[in-house]
Image (cartoon, rainbow, N blue to C red):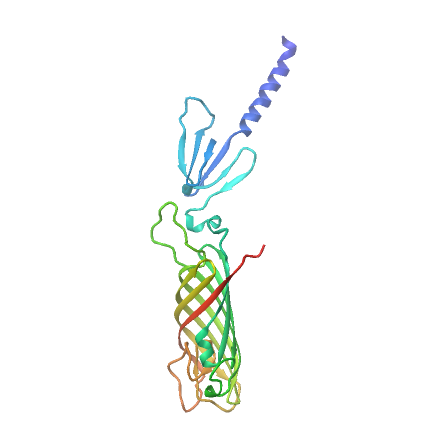
Length: 282
């Protein structure tokens, strides 16, 4: 029997290695602790497992997936979990995540604006806008302006103060939000050339209908700088789109009708955008 001892020892050694590899690992969110287990079942809200090493005498244990950061299975595959349903991109996999919007009232003050919004992840999206100054109605009324305005913003979409299992956004682009925004513009009006810069903090709410249409209503406050590139000065006031015209949705209240006053001033904004949700790119 002595000659079989090395074989027996080697067999037991290999068996211990296989048993060691058969264990699963639970990584907890709050402490990052690792628990050795054997996962029995994974559900949408809970998982069921037994403590390692597995014994028939051990009871089944349940744990909420919201408390787990991830599971590392014995074969090396990993399953990650999100803290709540709002943060899980899988809940919005079939929703459209991009929208193109227009500002209909801008057409009334000789401005045509188009915005593009794209969701980055639940609760976050970016938005870019381009506005053609002088494209729209009442162009002559505002001194035949021409130029371009560029806007770039980042949305933080609100989540509730409390969380109940199963809660999530009705739509990934829907909800109240705060949006920091940077505005830059160059335009010409009454034979004078101007530049303008502004930093805004917008507060708004966006509604989404049938995963196809959206309505975006907002108001904001910030600081703006305007200056002239010409010797002649026109009577004007900073508008919503970062341009200088007599009327608009965003403006600087401290202006001088007797001439252009350069410098940094308080800006205020409000507006309405109507949009269409684009199909997700493959």
